[in-house]
Length: 487
Image 1 (spheres, rainbow, N blue to C red):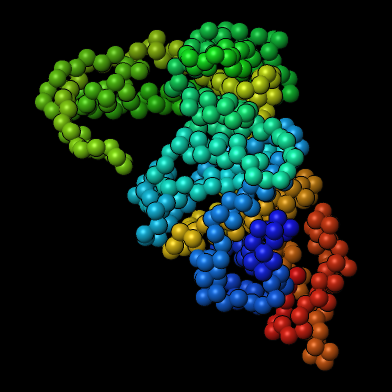
Image 2: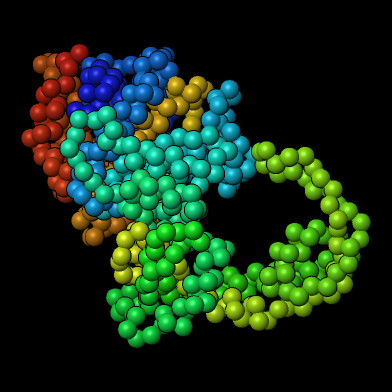
């Protein structure tokens, strides 16, 4: 609250908090329903704002410069305890808005034809607390986005009157691994723990060189049931320093990888059989994809028009086509791939054991949980705005709501040990919603309707909320409120 007020002023802060609470309570980001909700809830602001006021507020009151200043101040506040692990990832949010630059077609998993905005979050790993966020045009890929985030984390302390010093260690999945990004992280003084992509040459190299050393007794961890090996070598050919590599093997992952491999080979074999039978013409690229696990004999026959795909892909072009004469499984290649099933290759900027690296990577799901909460509990399944200033303002409010969500989640952790289903944040908020007050028509004041149930007391206690605090909040309600405020 202090940081929000310092950056945006008290009146704007009160409305930001009310809108964030609305997202938590109503599980929606459609602000046209906010006025109706606000008439039956206790607010930070002194009055209920209309939907037209909210529309103007989104477009005119909150500048990107102030949002960026708040993000820097908040990140420095959160990253205050020295060596901090942060998990980074991005998601896409659909939008039907026209005329907004960053709403573009991208690589959406559900429908690539939809316009979208890419949103990235950086999360403190130990408790799932959001550190910062950033919006990108929908057409940008993960690697390009990561470069901007690295720069933002490097510049956190610039221009701020703070003596906070912290060492950030970024944890990200394989989609963000590139020589450029890793070089930028090193230059920025950021640490990293990254999972390498299977198709990187270095992965085959280190597995071929070390796979026989992994599954030995001294590398077995009884707690996780995994084997792990750590060593140092150059990550890229031009590296001037060694990087710590970690190879881990997991039995369940081996079964999963081998099942995926054999299904892929069977599907490719069926596809090649049909192509041979039907005399189907194929491009060299299509054949090369299948040559990984098959020996293919073919001859050139005519040409094909290759359609452009994606933005900036160029014009359609005519390429030679080929027809399959015969094919057979390359059993040595399949066996070689099978022998590498169950292995994961990670790299870290600092020396650590394979177990430590895998444990840090396994907890990277904290950022996935944040996205799940944003989309299922806070209404971020679609943008629902029609101007770029509104988009940035709503993104700020989502960020504040995600902070509140993370606070409730972390403080009620012990409740989920006993009852995981009943102690989710939406379930807890529903319990809080039942605390109501009615207006006494004689005294014109509000009184609590019910005494707290045992379940409500249990759900409120971890957050430090008592019955006396609730009654004081009710007594502070404005006397001219028009209906039943909920605390």
